[in-house]
Image (cartoon, rainbow, N blue to C red; front, side, top):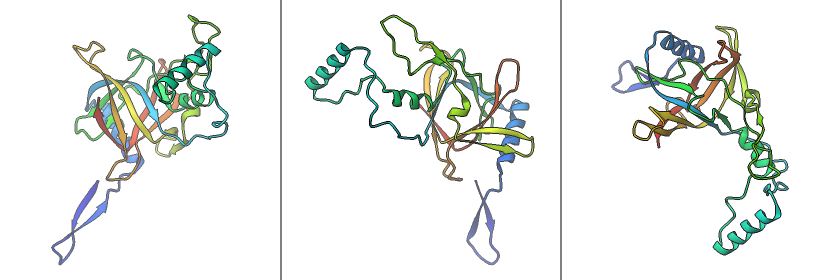
Length: 239
């Protein structure tokens, strides 16, 4: 945000930056949640994060074919169509790093309530961030068809890019940034009553800050919900 200030003896105006600090922003969001000054509009199902990941091992990493026949069929299909084999299974490197780029609730039934403040300035998580469920192990390869992948935990610390200390409350928050996309369900999963969509996360043109999420890893209730805030950035709704 910018504030217009009239300069003495001049017809022009001087633009100065807002003095809002991170503490100010979190305090405002907490107050809006406490006073219920928001409108609920969606369920958050996935958060996609952009990160600088190590590239060690990428050149030697190969698709994890289930058997030689599967590899041969894909290779012949690519040769016939003259296109790259885009539908090849993830390599170990790809699977490991893709899992580190998301916070995934697998279903809207497990997702977090998403709301917008009544003045439309803040995207809010009124009940916090829902506990992350275990997800199918991305590194597991079935020995035969019809088997179910084992589940593994989604560790917040593995996906965070750092942490920050809030002096006002004495809490530590894990930092997730830059965010690239929020996958949501609006209304109902029934196409006639609602549907799934996405919210693009972009840099705030006023502050030039990337979209970010702060999460306190200590559960705030018996359901495992975590205190969380969208601390910066801008958001654009889309399909």
